[in-house]
Image (tube, rainbow, N blue to C red; front, top):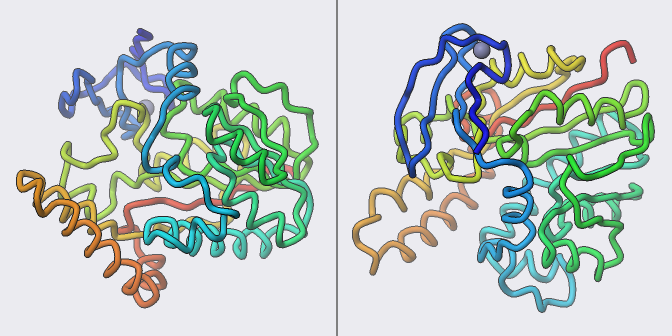
Length: 299
Ligand SMILES: [Zn+2]
């Protein structure tokens, strides 16, 4: 285990315990507000865990003939497709088509979407099954964590980290490594759970985001601080997804018989409602995820 005795963002030692969950102590820095787990598994143990994990969410039904066929099949995947397409459009407003690296690319859906739009895609994914699947569809994906990867300097136009920054033991060193691999004026895209999101705030420690694999919990403010500290200028930040399916799933948690039914129903409603709600949520900080784009400063 690695003890994080001071704030990973500002270095302050004044930390307040928020709660304990699954044996982890979740603390908040009194100086800058950054929320994190103060005792985490060392990085090699985590890398082994990611390499072999068989998360049902990502790895079921990998027998479809293409990513697109798979993602048409299930509501959750269909939502991922919609959100990724929106991010692709946002990136293309900031950068012309070029080289893109997706860190923690899983089975490669986002890279597949970018490839179809003319981008030259690269991926890093520590999970063996997911990365193998991505390669089978012709994507250039290495079975590695960001820490293990030897990235060329000033090579990529865009690097994306969709829901991965919450896993890093040191988000500052991760962002510095990314900055080094980006060319002048390059763009980083990040999404991560929003601790100020409506559902996360309501559920508090019961939020599913307080999970053993997540060790950092950001708000728009603390994520902005991380960007500043590592030499990026935030060019766009918004929040997305109300995630009320998670809320319903929590409320119906004790009635296992109905849990899946409620969850699937809520997911379907969420998918339909997202067409109307997404533009509204994007104007607030209430969405359960933060989506941010930063440009290398001085570029
Ligand atoms: Zn701090």
